Image (cartoon, rainbow, N blue to C red; front, side, top):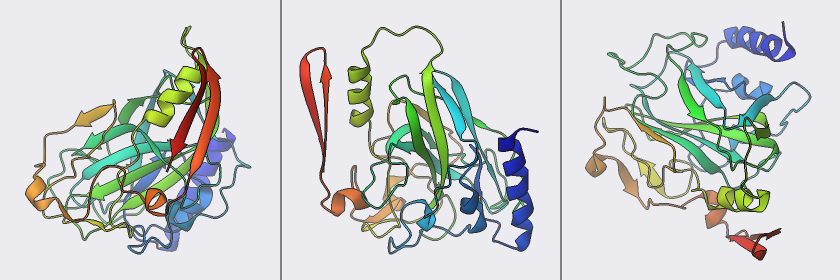
Length: 270
């Protein structure tokens, strides 16, 4: 049994301690402590991001992603709130903070984390693995090296809640040959949209009245499962929109400089 599988099995055993049955990310394998608390993100942003993760334990085996390869997302836990909409995003901050920027690599509108659900929930077990997985392609522009990925989810039927789990990943080189200079790939990463945030103290709230969330900026990889309405009239309240993240609202500045084929490039994150 590999170290990664062994860690996953151990974490499953911890779930018998009686935590809530809210759906959580089962794969990619999260940081160990992510599975010890399964509440939604605090509505005041006090545990943003990754539900207040502080350990970010990299001592185990990280999830290995290869550029251009197919990976998958799968969740566990019966309280699925009728499905909903999910995003997969990545930050290069190895210990993410409130100021980290999460870049979207895949979005799913409707039918996530479970498809074709006829009931509000899929039982009441916290350890049941939900049927079906969600394939996505690791972008060829994802920077090589260690990173932290996040799965964020908004249920179709629930209070104004946002769920988030985070996992360690190591991005490796291409499956095939690539002719695009690395500097251009890096620039494309920083042009990717920021993850959609709501219900975390940023002033945007989901209504959860039967409409799944339609993302303002889903990115270049989007799957729409047409099993729930995307009715914007009952989707949001408050101030919502692209780029309305806690990091942006905090007024934090970062500047990235690198040299590409056209000279030095600077990218500003505000």
